[in-house]
Amino acid sequence: MARSHSEPATVRFYQLAAMPLETALLGIVGKAWERGIRINLLAGDGAQAQRLDDLFWIQPPFLPHGLWNGPDPEQQPLLISLEPDLRNQATLLVLATPRLLPESGGVAMIIDFLPGHDPAALARGRDRYRHYRSLGCRMEYWQQNPRGGWQLHGQQDATRPDQAASQLIEDVAGNNCK
Image (cartoon, rainbow, N blue to C red):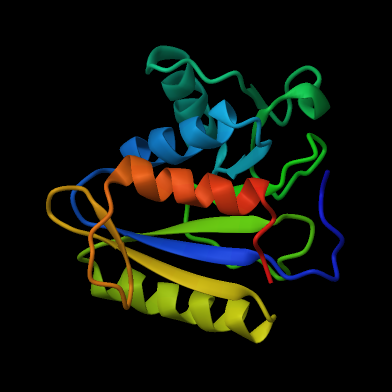
C-alpha cells in the first residue's frame, strides 16, 4: 500500500562507477520484485521507457512489468512511467534518469543514480540531495567501488551489489523509513 503524503521517504543515491545504469537497475529492481515489492520506475522519455521495457523482457531474470500507457497499469508489479505513477500501489520509486521530484510522499523509498565520474552530474545530484533533505527525507549515499561492491558513505566495509540490494529491499519491506 502506498504511504501517506505526510511521511517522508528514504532517499538512496547510488553513485555508479563500475557498472552501467541498466545493470544496477536489473539488480535492484530484481531484488525488490523477488520480495513482492511494487515498483514505479521513472524513465526520462518514451524512448528510454521502451528500452527499459525491452531490457526487462530479454535479460534474466524476467521481471513482470508494464508501461504506464499499456493495459492494466494498476496490476503491474513493476510499472515503467514518465511521471510518478502509483496506480500499482508502488512503495519503491526508482529513477532511471536524473530528476528532481517536488515531493517525496506516497512511497517508502526513492532510488536515484549518479554517474561516477561526471562532475556536472554529481553537482546536480548534490542539489537533489539537498532538496530531499530539506523535505525531511532520510538520506543515504552509496558509492560503488571498482569491483562493483557498494559502500554506504561513512562506512568502511564494502558490500557486494546483491547485499546492498537486499538491504534496500529489507528497508522498503520493513518500512524502515523516517
